[in-house]
Image (cartoon, rainbow, N blue to C red; front, side, top):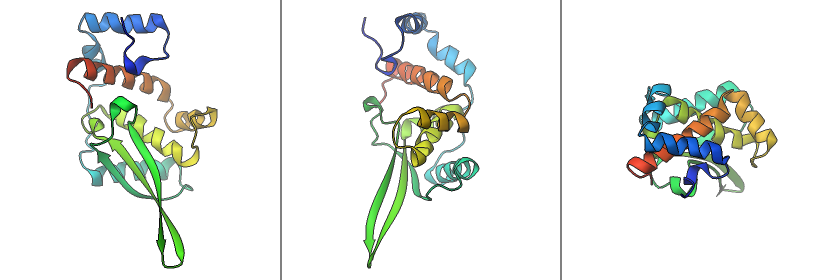
Length: 167
């Protein structure tokens, strides 16, 4: 049997446990019990405020964000759960840079913890470009349960993929 796409790289015994939960129809129930409450960040304005609050709490000295939006075009299947970009524009004789963050719209209806994990991940990219030790250290500084949330998010996406498709 093929390894679920979001769990590639995890040990076989862990994947076997996830498969067993899926075959028994218990993966969604388990996640629902653990992460029952969806967040209340419904639109782009609320998302911007949410991200800005987290940024002000953890990364006060980093570059300001010009735009934060839910993006329905991000392809979760291609592992893009969120993106951060710097857009440079020439204004007169100066070069202006604006930072944008886009969060996949699948997180509009996700549990609050998963939105927080994605935001932490994208905020960490403001300071660390690569997924290295310093990057993950910063993630766990902002969210101590980052690694567990990342794994559970992968389970959530696997469950969505199996039950209704994720795109």
